[in-house]
Amino acid sequence: MERENMRSVRTAVVGCGMISDIYLKNCRDLFSILEVVGCCDIREDAAKQKAREYGIRSMTLEEIMEDTSIEMVINLTAPAAHYAVIRQLLQSGKHVYTEKVLALELEEAKELATLADKNHVYLGAAPDTFLGSALQTGRFILDSGMIGEPTGCLAVLNRDNRVGAEFIPYIARAGGGIGFDVGIYYMTALLSLMGPVKEVSGFMDTREPMRTHRYPNRPGFGEPYQVECENLMAGALHFQDGAMGTVLFNSECIMNRYPELTIFGTQGILYLPDPDGFGGEVKVLRRGSREPAAIQQNHGFEENSRGLGAAEMAWALRKGRVPRAGKEMAVHSLEALHGIAESARTKRAYSMTTDFYRPKPLPQGYLRRSDFADFEADEEAALAVDGGGLEDEGKALAADDAGLTNETKTLSVGDNGSVAKEIRR
Ligand SMILES: NC(=O)c1ccc[n+]([C@@H]2O[C@H](COP(=O)([O-])OP(=O)(O)OC[C@H]3O[C@@H](n4cnc5c(N)ncnc54)[C@H](O)[C@@H]3O)[C@@H](O)[C@H]2O)c1
Image 1 (spheres, protein in one colour):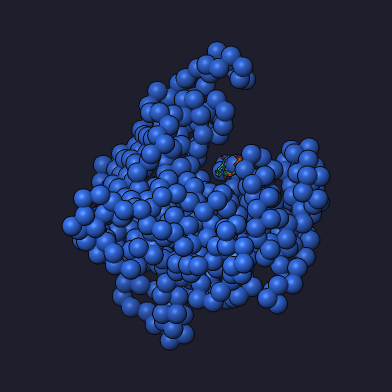
Image 2 (cartoon, helix red, strand yellow; image 1 turned 90 degrees about the horizontal axis):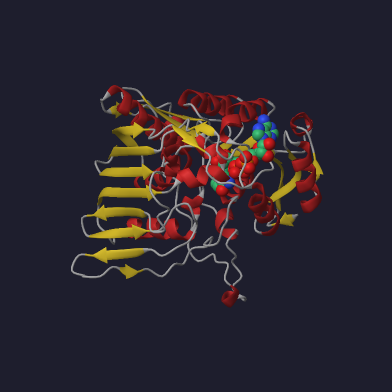
């Protein structure tokens, strides 16, 4: 593909399970910057089937790593495999975009981020739903000052994993709990909108860890199983800019079709939809109004656009800028969740050790709508226009050029344009 003089990024997918279809479909149909040429799975038959369906090569991980024409790999393995798979790929010099979470353990995630910098390759991670139309509209509203200064936020997520674990077994295993597996969408949404957090505290528990499979038509009916992860998590967040918030992630309830993601400001309240999706209604209640008003959306990616973060990273690679769904925010998001877990153990507030620059908003007006058939700027073009990357990226680059450090912060910019901002306390 030659488009805007941009060479597409030859890509392979590792992990051909449940989520792989929407990725392979979107990479083929939505994102011309990504050219998926191969796929791999430890279950060879699964890889062969996807290869047949999408007209790509079934490969081994070694073949992918040795193929110098493949620049980027999208990792869609289960969370427990992430660290080992990503580490090998980074070591082989591939740019990696991974489904969440970056790694199960915070130290592993930090190690991967360091390794990416050392090898001068990009590392990006889901969730990428913050790049969708709803959360970008939310960002536009915040930036416009419509709700004044954000002072607080609330995220409430309820599901029934007793039922869910019968169909998606990993959600009862390490790393699959409600906080780390789904709460991370809420955490990432809040961070992308409100910036970094300085301190967190909270509680976490596994209610009824021993259970029995109870669906006659499912494997293991009547047999016991252990829930290895959290199913209740509640946290308090203290943002660097002074705002405060609370989160509740509860999978011992029913599936709540109306989860809450709300930002409170000095002049109004912003109501956002489920950040597990890309679109949805965005409402604002302004001082003096009795009812919240729905806001017209003018950003692309309102449908299921999984792969958006990977495509944005591919454009960043070609444009020589920092990806929006980059490793720094992913590590910070994971640390905030681990911090809540740590606070639950120690009964003390947890001080964050990592930091990130807020990703810049996507430009509005790049749409995928059939009634705009003659509208030439399609939504992918929003990823390609200049000015993407991170807020304060310019400042960070300038600081690095000048070798500037101060007592509290060190800014460093890798050769690949990635920005690490480390807090020294
Ligand atoms: N299923 C969903 O609805 C969903 C939604 C959003 C995100 N995700 C994320 O997507 C990722 C994959 O989820 P899924 O539901 O497709 O899981 P899955 O279990 O259906 O698929 C994972 C695949 O990875 C393969 N695999 C495991 N270890 C491997 C290795 N070392 N090398 C190669 N292949 C390996 C497995 O054989 C399996 O086919 C996870 O990170 C998950 O958090 C899933």
